[in-house]
Structures are given as C-alpha cells and as structure tokens.
Length: 154
Image (cartoon, rainbow, N blue to C red; front, side):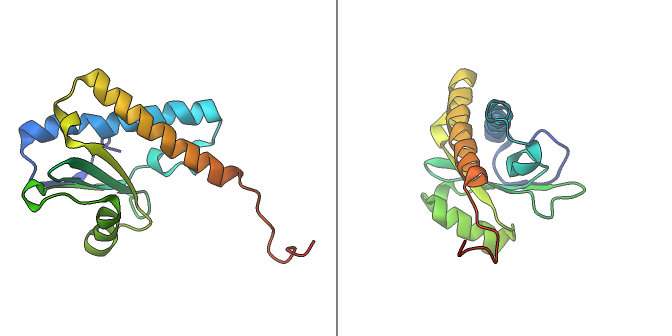
C-alpha cells in the first residue's frame, strides 16, 4: 500500500508521518504472510493491490482507509491530521472515505495513535493482529458456499 510510488500528500507533520507510515507497511507484510498460510490467491486480496489510501489521524486513532478500485497508474495517498477535531469511529471514517474522498468499496483498519511512538516490534505486533483478522474474514467470505443463480431450489 504505502511502499509503492504514489501521488498525494497531506497535513500530518512529517516527523509524525515518517513514524506512522511504517504501520500500514507492516500490515501489508503481515497480510502477505497470512495469505501464504491460508493459501489464498493474491488476486483475491484487495490489500495486496496498489491502493488509493486515505489516512486520518484523530485524537486517539490512526485510521487507514484503502481501496484498490480505480487505483491504476500512480495511486493517490492522502493523509489528514484531525487531532483537533476529536475522535472518529470506523463507520464515520468509512462514510467520509466514500462521500468526501470518493473511494469505492473501501476497507478501514484502525490503530491506536499511541502506536505511532511505539517500538517497531509493537507496531509489527499490532499490524499482524489486524492483518490476521482481515485475512480471516476474507477467507470466510471466499470459502462460503454459494448457490449458482437459477439453481437455488435444487
């Protein structure tokens, strides 16, 4: 997600952003590891595609919304410092991502903002936990039995 060339920017101070940008990279690495373990095709995992990303730092959390839809060429990555606006829940970030940023079918992962100043090992651990949850939910969706349309009564 964040380790590829991109366009964009934002208003989070560089000293904070340079520490925070490691977290989604650790998340992506952990997703790749979990995908290998679950034996899921990389093509079925949106987080492994080039993604448009919107990161929001509020008073208590770092929210990272991403979508691979329409992210061809150079993906757009924006980041917003909203610490003075209080806290936001995941649903508010999801709605703002769609309505204000225009991402299609985004996914939001949330980390405590205190993780920005944590050690690299703590960041990796938190990113791995979120990645495991993300891949586990994706695995459930991908392996859920489905009925072929037209054959429901059989």
